[in-house]
Length: 279
Image 1: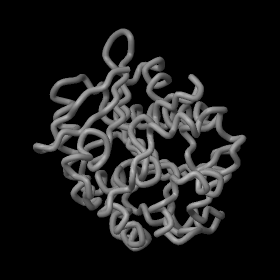
Image 2: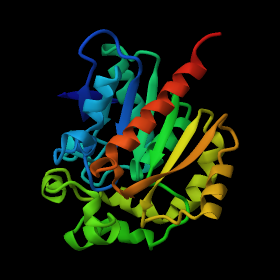
Image 3: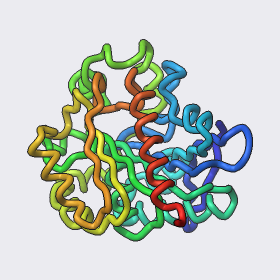
Image 4: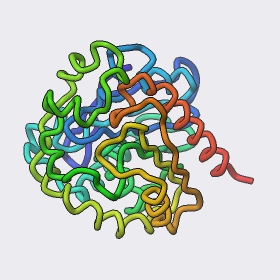
């Protein structure tokens, strides 16, 4: 795993990259973190089993975990962050830079968590060419006031919104102190508008979509009716899966269930690669 920088239309975005030890990658997973966290979310340090970057490379894929605009390398240049539509433009430019310099295999597969899920949905709706999307921790009917997300990474909120602490390896919260970051102001301002926003972009997604909700998800309503209603909005997608991840909280990729979730996501990627192969 190494840290790289990507040119996103004049803005430099930092990223973590893991690649297979031998040969070209099967495909490239682009992992996009949620609000208040950084790219290292996908390389959790509390236990070796939770790292998507390690697992993906072992299974023959490249994994690129990008710091979204306003985080990591770009935080000084964009202290207030950017609205979702502009983040989509910069993500596309960054991936153009990446694919010009690195082999992508069968193509790009976007995996987004929480606010990162919103970004990958927007990018696909904007026409970014990808194999498919895997989104976790991102619904459309809030279970709590969305404005609460501005402060949800404080210590009291860890126990309130992350789910039971036993879902995470010992030391997770201590390790996450280096991964947390303030939610940029422009990003936070858009949070209350997401339920209406998703109505506009979901029908524009034209690739397979997998939506995962943790058993102990506390940000979004995820009853059977809620999930059926969400899936029905992706009228342009050829395939929509809605799954639950047992024994997991909102931050699935940091918990004990991370390996199970990542394996399921990579299996969905394999389905997308097979679907896209020429006949």
